[in-house]
Image (cartoon, rainbow, N blue to C red; front, side, top):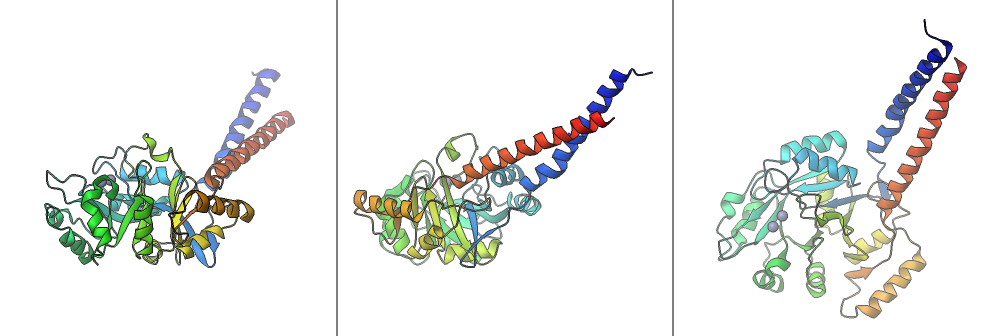
Length: 342
Ligand SMILES: [Zn+2]
Ligand SMILES: [Zn+2]
């Protein structure tokens, strides 16, 4: 026979378990569910980055883990770009479909010879590996590699040109016709302001990437991501936004992109869970712009602007944490009430 006290404690324990179940059922899934996409001028606003490694090359996470990681970081789209391997893409895409993250298939192709290291090309939207066709090509010209990427439906982006600037500079100044785009920056290094400006004003695709390997290094120590304005919320919409250059690269307080893209970026309303960015009053933006023009006179306004926005993703994380805590308190109160009723 249970004493009245023991019975009360047992019922109270049951109430607590009930409350926990409520929390798990009603609170956690909405946080994980696909957030409502923000629209600006009829475009879906997506947050992304297009250079990621997994255990299929020198990354420490499996493709699924990388996808989950970026989903949790509030991203809408990433590209999987392992060194000389396309094999991680099917797993990443399956996981992306599951959790609601768009995965662009890709690969980081090395066209190095021993004397030319870090001459890499990011192949995006490819249907297979093109590493074999590209190997050893760099000594003369990467043209064959870019053309092979095109032949399998892809786009070729010059990776981290700043690491081998003496090699890549002539390709930027003398337009070749076969290079589709350039990475402007990763969290640690970037093209010079004038090179960035040339990339954007010459009509190239441009990206700002993490070159993600571990997640424990400085990949997220700086705020770096890309905002895309897409006609559809899928791989083809992302491709169309990149090639139409309706995208901005946000790096700390700097925003790079075409004037159309920056206009769209500035018209994003206040922070949203998915791809939201911008924020800040127009007054603040005007101040920021004036400051840019004062401190960076060499950069044409067309392609370069600095703004001072609060990081919307941190704000969102704070809101979710507060809501979570609030719900937890409600559930505990309900549990206490149930226990007292018995
Ligand atoms: Zn590389
Ligand atoms: Zn890389």
